[in-house]
Length: 473
Length: 70
Image (cartoon, rainbow over all chains, first blue to last red; front, side):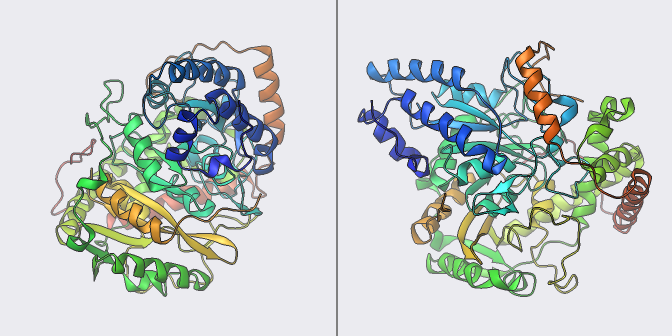
């Protein structure tokens, strides 16, 4: 039918759907275009684990038959997408980003993929990721069997992890959206570094059946796309109870931001230090402008501070112990030594030595932290915080080096929002909010459990004021 | 290792193995620090974490929750 423009996948789901309905393109045109881009551009960013062109063609033809008969199934119908390579996809390698699993093949699809297929979305690629989603803690961006994730804004910079390919493929316009996963930061970080929108849903909202387990009590699956609105539609597509996931909340999600309370009635917590001392200087103008956009929307902002807990130590201990059990066979067989990152190998081994007493203590303290965070959210409807406090690091830089530009002391603020929010299972959305030195800057909204519609309604309004910028190809 | 839900078949085509072999050559060399030193550092990190978690009083703690309850 039509020639798909090279920049078409920077469009919103609504625009893509309108083009399909108007017969400007067929779903097959879009699938072929996405596969072509993934094959030609994907290697520039080490973003792709596997292109699944033949399967995409078959699915697209089915969608085209449906559209021809006017069987419309919603905004996701006919839209190509990529999935982090920790999600099982039948008959193809699911490598979890790691050499020891490079030849691993499953015969079923992850639940979230099944749900997207039912909605008519078309998988065009499995996307690169940090090996084992970063379990054990890695030192270098190169901790992946596909090499370091390179940032579409500047290929000397990291695309973030562990959903590296999901962030890069969306930012480079290779797919309109991608699925990622977060145990502690793996959706928010690549979304922030690549300048796209990333939604971390409430724990238990999207099924993890068919996804690699890193931490049973922390893992979550969520979308990365250009627009918050698209993330809402995608979440509606993947959310819902699943008896195959013991962590499932058994809840559906309907994207209905119009029913969220208006911004003027909402109380937002922020910490001044997060927008000054805690933040690398070049990021301050963009983030303070972004904060002011929320104020202009009518949000009542008030100072907030996270309750005092050792969030990072808790997350590391819990992931260490759970991953030590999950990957016991890998560790005990010695195959763990095939991983790319020496620090990660050591971290997995050391994590498997965490005692039950230490793990349970961490889990008890976690329960206390959750309770205090619930208390904090009695005073606030949403927390506003920089997603990351610096721009994407250089690919060769060690990721565990302490910051040389920011003080480690001072007020706590909300800067530990990533480990804290993950420990408490809170939803969060990362929104691009400008550039610093040519690299994306991102602001984050964190909400109470199951308040995705509230976050998305604010995010939609925010993106009318500050729409996401695109990198040059 | 563990994956939730679907069972692994172990069926791998020759092409998939070839892809995997190419991918594995792309894996960068491990870091420069000797493995035993890395392991010692990783163990020490867990000791530091234990200490910082140990500083939190459990006076108000309940039993641990293994599933997030909204």
